[in-house]
Image 1 (spheres, rainbow, N blue to C red):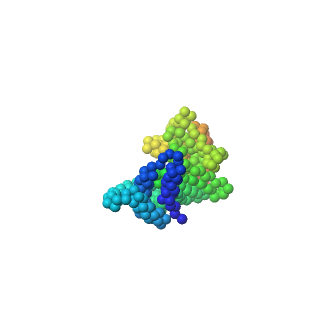
Image 2 (image 1 turned 90 degrees about the horizontal axis):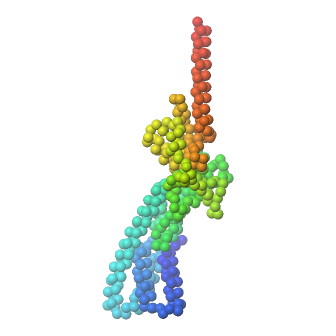
Image 3 (image 1 turned 45 degrees about the horizontal axis):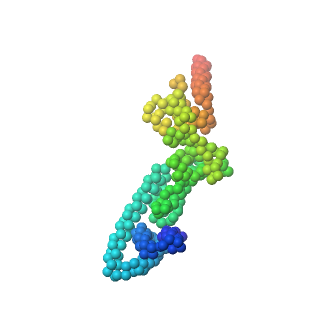
Length: 342
């Protein structure tokens, strides 16, 4: 059932009018009626063409009530006719202004939704706005790998001006191998920090992101009274310089300026990045992610096993030594076979 926003506004007006009539102050009845006409004109202009059947009925009732009030205020038919013409012009201008404002409201919300990384939901948001509900939500779900699924629910409501705003979105991360471990968090628009869909996934995955010079990471063992994870924050005074940390690593990506900048940007967004370590001319693939709490980086091998920098280099040295041994064994075996032939 669709909400009747006109009825809500009429009830608000009636409450104000009742308080004035019950007050001990001398009430200007004629003044109240004039204000009521202006209120009716504003409502009829803003809601003209509404698809809501109940609101259409409310508008018809308002027009009859307006006509009745107009006769009380202006008993002279000629004056009433002139004011009626002027009123049509006023209502028409309000309708045009309201239509432009509503279209602008849709465009702003669509842009904001796309900015957050929910571009696929922009058309659904526009459709829901056109239906005229006071509140609504749109959802999306996708797998981020073969085991983990992320669900997002975007929540919208109307403000005191009747325009729509996005209140925030709820994200839920589920791992099929750990059905009892569901991580969810509501990202509030009023928090002052814009968290994108990709950053939400990274936070729920236990990784850190950087926003406006402050590193942030969920404390996955601590929630507030609303069931949301508490945030650990590390500002510039904490002393984590990820660029300096990266430059101290033997990374192939560090040799090309654009590749290094892209790597740095992605790590600040909370991504786990695939990189190449170079040691004594040999290359090894690893995954790295930011670790602001310990002013370092976390390193993982291709089997998702966490390793230290020393281990990463040592493992490569061990791999090279093992390859040399195998090569030497093959050479000796080939030599023995050659001697046997002769």
